[in-house]
Image 1: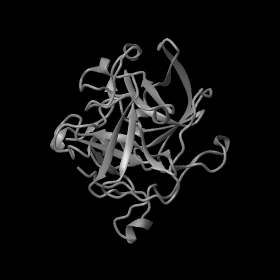
Image 2: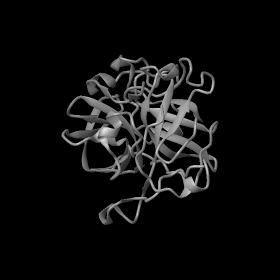
Image 3: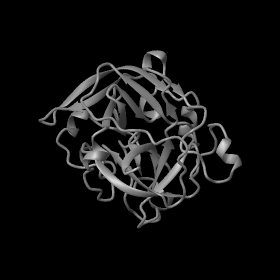
Length: 273
């Protein structure tokens, strides 16, 4: 069963927590960790995200649904949380929250403009035209829990090395632990990792190829440590924010299933299990 990787938890409990990402994932290295951020909502939710600029964050659209107030959480040198204002939230126009609730594929990505710049080194997006095949390696880095159901086990950015499985497409990429292949418990995203960046090594450096949307337990059971579902990043900047960011008409990465599929426009469909 697919599990949306968002969690209800008091943000203040996260400040001293030592873990995140299930399956025994280690703390993320500097390159994977430095642009990862945390978002919290007035309904007690928290998600991960990634800074693409000092004042711009990419996350999952279901992390910033209408009807709640959201803040970005920064940690000071003593690991105390400091809440930062958000200026604008732009969900992908093709995002359908009802599709998420029905466990179907949708463009589960959003851009968040911040009220003030962060002191971070932004991540870079993967270049246009990058294809994804089964077996390709990725790094997922997020603030989510290390133990399912234990909110206190989240709060530090940890990273899992996963590989693509199944048939990667324009609106969904499924990742799994190469050792467990999603059939038994292994590394993977869990609650609180929604919106976490999914990196690929390109040109000797990490580049964001998408964000975490959902997870499953082993053998498609409920929980975590099975599959990690990724929505490829479809955002492309057309000038500055003041001239508005526009969503690219086609998703990135382009599918490599067959030639006709490479020219299909982004659209919602049935979510792959």
